[in-house]
Image (cartoon, rainbow, N blue to C red; front, top):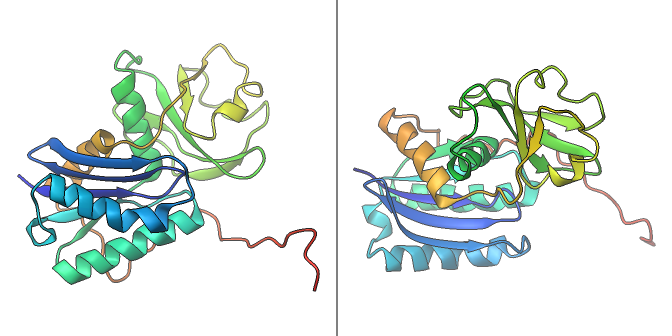
Length: 230
């Protein structure tokens, strides 16, 4: 079975883990959201050391590839490309929203078989990055940016729909419907990444290390502070 290094810097969470034979061997996680560039290298070294593994023994690296924080995605992508080129191993890219959906299902195994899973990543104001998955964590819609209003997601709410992720809290008062359910505390996890990465590895679903780009969903827009004086 594969030795897989898992890296996620797409949200406030900086996550590094190593799995082998479908088991998590070591994990490091930080949820402060400001230290990805400082922590990622250290976390990788610590995880490899704890698992008694060298980079040359890895079979692949699984990267949470977005959507999410523009800066976080660039940090993770740059690091993973350098590592994979240096060691000569392929990369697996996983949708961040699917990782969240997998984690929601892991934490809530009693979710109805006909339910819809709707992960939300916080964007600006009332905007979220989202997608819809079924209870088998299969994508039902492509990811899209949604400015949440009272009429959002109406086409899905004929069945139980679970909202979660760091963008869901701000939507609770807006999405008032008997089939709208909110799950708190869902963030990327090593176990969720491992389950998805193992499937991709067995299916040979690797990205082109040289040319893949993070899934930004929207173009980066730099903003100028209102009190900026030239």
